[in-house]
Length: 306
Image (cartoon, rainbow, N blue to C red):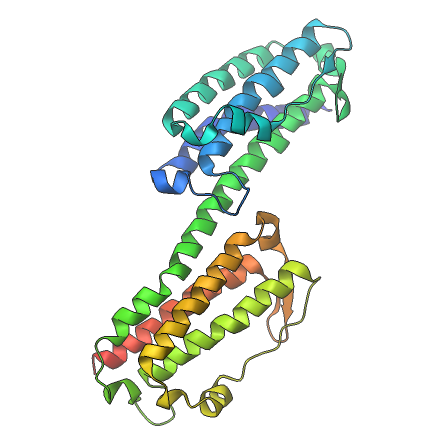
């Protein structure tokens, strides 16, 4: 590893405390304990992992590599520690405070490493030969950058799933303003009424659920595109019972959110191909669906105010 690369990795280690504080600022307790998918860690658990890895995977290994000749470095199983040390029962502020203290200790130790010492080597139980410089790279990239990215991804995922989960309640509230007749009245010929918009929201969830599933389990599937007006006419949207539409919309949206929550984080970066818009990831589609909700709910609200 060249001197320039070492300096960049050291800069990453020094910057992480401020970046972590910024990432956690304003994060509610419920969000910090929210898991993005079954079997995945919450922000709190990631912070606990950062703390314990700082002590046992980095500080301890740096010290051994610098003090011993060719030490054998045992692996540290983060999942075992998460369970045995009850990560979910800990307090985030206490965890971050202890991690910050340990990071200062790591930085003090690394500041005294001399040129030749960066090549001192041991053998990691599963990763094989490992120098001090290799460990520094893992520390900065595989630890700091990776886990900060996880925290930001969890925050984004929580935010979009909360928006998506809110649709049934928001839609029911918006439709309360309409009478039996006005719910079927469009602003002008050729435009949709409130009940037609509600039907569209209900049926589009089926399209998106299919897209999410295909992307998750197929390589770059090609999407088919819904002809909204043709479906509205063939399914007689304007004659639909608003109560029945709401019931189906609630069930469909609950299923869709459950589907998204079941997907591992890496699946959110998988993509499918839209015939007109090109490559679209699950994350992009989820964001667009939330924006689509907002757009059509504003349309319904505008119709109610007429």
